[in-house]
Each structure stands twice: as structure tokens, then as C-alpha cells.
Length: 425
Length: 69
Image (cartoon, rainbow over all chains, first blue to last red; front, side, top):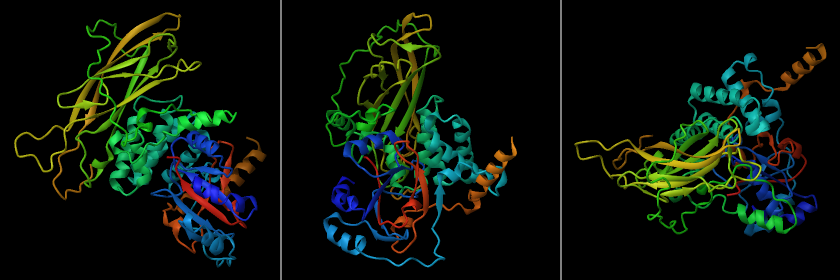
């Protein structure tokens, strides 16, 4: 994208070409920071539900003054040809009866009246997606909209509808109405959609964003820190990244494996810290598995996944900014490895002492057997990872307490696959 | 609800396409030379409003569908 922006700067300034972008990412603020950092001076549209219908990016289209595609995937190394064959060409208007191949107009969709339509679930789903596009994670109708999109997915079973239901769930998870299970339900919905359409790389990337390090073609958001620093150096205020980046979102498989902390000591070795039975802090977990095991194309370390743990203060509880950061101690089952045994949550941001804290880590066990098991006991279909979090939390009366909360994280395991096995799981 | 508001709502609903017209788009909608592009209106990423590709009629456009990653 930066290449085309630079190439077309002059012709765009002359008014002979207009650039427009569309992104499919879950979080628009991150792309807005990218736009600010790269100094993109053209509009960029937000399409997290995928109404444009793409299964891969980037896609570049040269569109004439009549709204007709004339050039596809132009080569920046042949920019002169692009100019001569597209920008400097005149094109005839299409026949009047040539219709657009489809439509989604957010300001029309948001006014759809489900009760008046022939397909109420479809109308409700479109209206709900439109309301979420316009209202975001803080939308006052988000519970009804998540329900409508999930009802549509259940009614049709269509992969696209399942994906969109996941987008809505993750959106709610990022806002004030978050429910403990939202993140996991989103990941599961995306996996279900991808299993039906494994060539949908935009859906695959959505899972990989929060998935294990070795499942990533590249780091997704490792540019954010540089962008914030360079925008600030220009004297501007960087666009705020509203949802803190998880470790998985900046991880890159080409980088060295994080240093093992096998010698780390548990923060509560005697188990003496008073338990918080979820009274002050709600613990939420989500597991994003390697996407290779949604189909049979490749084999992954068995159970390769990224585990996300969130601590969310309840009611009037607040983090104690001056206290040691919250920590997570991970008890690994036999045969498992993890990128860390002792994970440290990021410190609460000043002014956001009631905001959730998150941490994530990679975990995996041995490789998937290449064939079906040799009789006897079938391999387990899940493993349970035990962990506990310790944290300081302040209560409504100003008292601050140190608490521990135990948790169990169920890690689904892919079944062994035989060569040529192509079932969906 | 006053009659003016009722009339406005009726007018607004009349402009909305019926769901039976919903067609899920595919990549080919943007990569088929000679085809009209879909009618697409979406929010801008900075939250400043919405943008309708139809507003670009009369202009040569390079539409870039991409990701920041």
C-alpha cells in the first residue's frame, strides 16, 4: 500500500486519480494509526464483517468513472502502463442494464425492518451488523445485535454468517458489555467458518492474530510501537490503540523462541494466599488453536495453541497501581511445553484502573500422530492446564488486598489424522 | 409518535433494500474486468462518518483492499 500511495501522489494531487482503501481488520483504530503513521491522505473504509466479500488481501482494482473495473492487481513496476492503459484512457459507459453484483450500504442496512421482510433473520443480521459498524463495542444494542447475528448463523449455517457472529462476539468482548465467554465463542465461530472454507485467508488471519506464534506468516501488529513513536516525534498525538495488543499480535515466528523461564519460582509456592472465588475479579480465558488443524493440509505440534487470560475487576474493584503487577503461574501437564511458566500482566494504565488486564502465552505438546492410533486406548481429545493468578486489588472502601485465583484451561486436541483424511473438525 | 416522524420513518424504510435482494459478494466482484463494482457504503476507520463508493462516479479510482498487517 505505501508503494502505491507514493507512486500515485502526484497524479492524485492533480485530481486525475482518487485512492480509496478498505480494510477488514477487527479494530479500526489500529488501521487509523497506520493511516496516520504512513500519512495516507485518502479515505479508508472499515469492513470487519467482510461485506466486500474478499477471501484474501491485498486486492487492487482500477475503477473507471462509470464504476466499472478496468484494471486488476496492477504491477507497481509497470506504473507507466497503469497510467497509459487506465488513468489516461477514456472508457465507454456500460450498458444501462448492467447491474452491480450486490450491495451493502450501512446507512440503509441499519434501517432494515426485519418484521416487514420475507427473510427476517437475514434482515435482522444485516441490521445488527450495520448497527455494530456504526456503534462499535459500546453500542447500546450490542447484546441484541450479537444475538441476531448468532441466530442468523444458526439458521443458515453459512460460513459467512458464522464468521460475522464471531466478529460481533469479539466486538462485545472489547467493550463495556463483555461477557466472560465472548472471546472463546468468537474464536470458535471463526474456526467453524474456516473449517468450511479453508481457502478464506482473511478468516484464517483473524484466528492467527490471536493464535500460536508458529501459525503466523508474519507479525501482525509489531509496527504499532514504531508508529506511535514516529508520529509523536513529528509532534502529533498518535491515534489511540483502544484495545491493548496481546503478545500473540506482535509475535513473529521468524524471531527466536522466547527464553525459557524454567527456573522461575511460583509466586505462591505454599498456596497460602487467600483465594478470590471470583468475587473481586473475574478470570476469563480463551484458547486459539493452530489453524492448520481445521483441515488436513499440514500437521502441527499437537495442541499447539495460544492461551489468553484476562483479569476483569468486578463492580467497584480497582487495580492498585503501586502494587507489583499481577502474575500467572502455569502448571503444565506432562509432555507439554509453554513459552513461559510465569507470565506477568501489563501494569494498569493510569486512569484505567478498572480496565481488564491480559496476558497470553503459547503452549503445545507432542506432534500429531501421522496415522490412526494402533488400537488400544484412543488419544485424549483435550488436556487441562492448571494455573493460578495472583494480584492486588482495591475494594470499594479503599482497602487493597492480595488475592489468588485458581483456574483450569481446557485445551482441545485435534484427533490423529490418517494420510488423505480431510474431515472437518 | 407524530405524523411527521411516522412519515419520515416510512420514507426511510422505503429506501432500504428488501433482504431478499441480499447477495453476498465475492472476490470476483472486484477482480472481473468489465464488471460494475458493487454498491458499497461503509464507515470510515477514523469514525468520522461513512463513505459510499457511489460518490466516486465520474472519477478514476484505485481501490486498495488491504490490511495494516
